[in-house]
Amino acid sequence: MNAKNPVKITDTTLRDGHQSLFATRMRTEDMIPIAEIIEQMGYHSIEMWGGATFDVMHRFLAEDPWERIRTLKKYMPTTPFQMLLRGQNLVGYRNYPDDVVEAFVAQACDVGIDIFRVFDSVNDERNFETSFKVIKAHGKHIQGTVCYSLTERKLGGPIYNIDYFVNKALKIQEMGADSICVKDQAGLIAPYDAYELIKALKAKLDVPVQLHTHFTSGMGALSLMKAVEAGVDVIDLATAPFGMRTSEPAMEPFIVAFQGTARDSGLDLNKVFEVGKYLETIIPKYKRFSDQTRFSVIDTSVLLHQIPGGMTTNLVSQLKQAKALHRLPEVHKEIAIVRKELGSPPLVTPSSQLVGAQAVMNVLFGRYKMVTNQTKDYVYGLYGKPPVAIDPEIQKLALKGYPRGETPITCRAADLLEPELEKAREATKDVAKSIEDVLVYALFPNTGLSYLKWKYGLEPVPESVKPVSLEDVEKEEELARLAREGKLIKKEDCQK
Ligand code: CO
Image (cartoon, rainbow, N blue to C red; front, side, top):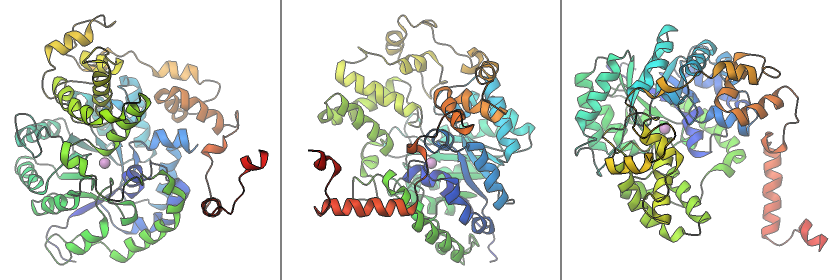
């Protein structure tokens, strides 16, 4: 390989890959057998922590999230470890006070995270200030992120145009970012828009540019290809069995596509095949967590109304509960209106849930007849400042009688939050043995405390969170097959 400018690759298999396809359920024990081959790949980085992993691991897998970093580091001592951090929301769903953010990020640095991809759900860069400081102090890599969003089908219009993204990126670079990521969580970016955007960013920025997109709409691979042509430094890909659908585009075709060109990645295809082959053998354990409701590998609704798949799942379940599933088309229309009234935030955790839930309320009970607490906090400014001003009428309506006050704040949201770390130490003093334990509780008080009790044998570990073996899965499938063929007498039938 003698490529002039090899495209660098972040492998997302161990985080976004299984988060997107298997509800984040992959266990550390299933990562270990491929860790050494992945280490030999020479990836720019491997994304293996953050996002939903911390929540899912302690809650549904009874695994210590911190331990995963230490364990994998033993097998992968040289490849940089990357995590996804939701800015002041860390790996949770609300803004945490600065003392919790400082302790969490410092611990992640100490345990072995090398690159922090930091984003904010309304693109308010003030929500980066605290985490950036800690990452820098530990000499680790800050990847500042701008969430990609649209108000029209393609890039442009009054809000999400090239200037918006370039100006955001410049501001984040000025705050000390070592690289910039455009994070297209919903797979909205179209190939020629990716080309224009990456060209513009490369022309203005001094630091490397990375593009993160999803295959969801079917455009992901095309857009990454155009981004590489435009000079993007790093792209995110997943090994094929954990790629495509709502995950990242698959790694293997990219390696071949750029072979022999100026941007040849130089990666060893055979090694990726080995990883893929192994993943196929463990997938039976995780298949139950994948969405198999449609045959198509792409979600065409994203092309139509830009509403990411995960959000539609939530809407459908909310409407089902209210016995109003037939009103989904109305909700889709209402989402666009609510989003505009709330200052056109990007639709990403947690802003996507907030807009979706309020739109459902508006359709079911009349516009803003009921305002969710999350909407009230958002309008007050607790999530940060949205890209454009919130509609003043809606603001008045939402903040009527709001306990913190009827005038929204303009300061950084976390400036209003009281410290919480000491309280968390106090609350866990009988069970926590380290700052890592205290942080699990500080982020997730209910499920965190249950987890700590399992960890130290104070309460039995429930069957539902224990690992299943391939043999268990085979037995289950055999039973299901017999039941389908009517060859199985069910327990219930015997009791009748
Ligand atoms: Co993603």
